[in-house]
Image 1 (cartoon, rainbow, N blue to C red):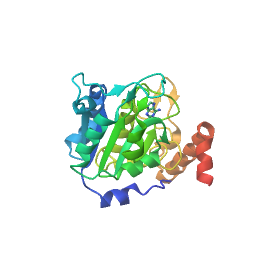
Image 2 (image 1 turned 180 degrees about the vertical axis):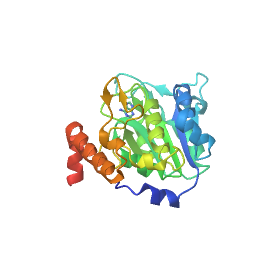
Image 3 (image 1 turned 30 degrees about the horizontal axis):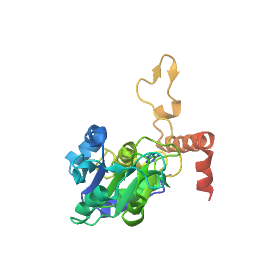
Image 4 (image 1 turned 120 degrees about the vertical axis):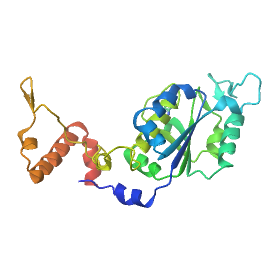
Length: 244
Ligand code: ADE
């Protein structure tokens, strides 16, 4: 049932991935990135995640990164100079596969996109803020604009954290059992089947008998039928993608 040959591709690529995140609020996501699976993946040397405070790349004494928009529109716009200085400092050191800008008007982030990005060696994620960034940065420096959903966040930090999480967890070795990354919802456009653990009965709520039967073939069959049933019921749009 698992269409995406992650294992085959992973087997060919064993370099340490590097993700550079550019933000005006590094403290907002620092804790998240250093805990749990992301923290462990970094300690194991599977990935390096570097946070860069955009204010460190300003040349004015107030460390301002934004200014009023031309045209008299409302809000503030992030200026070209600090972003350009930060990205230039990074690209002078190494080649980046993608320079990503988080924005609600970007391409929708999906599991296939996470799979593709997890195979990259070096990524920059620039977190948007305020009303946006000077469009010239998007035209000249950004290679990919990504949205995590059709809603507007106060900044791109949560989007960057979501992307880093989804990308890093599928690097081989990041989670204990790679097979479980393969059986995630969305890897094959099917939602995952329900899972249960001990006790087999709790407050009269029973685990399906089939899971206690020991019959592996029947259990696999049950798992697939559950996946299909849940996807049809909860995400009929995904079933249509399989049919195509
Ligand atoms: N910045 C603000 N909203 C966002 C979204 N939905 N996705 C990515 N970046 C964003």
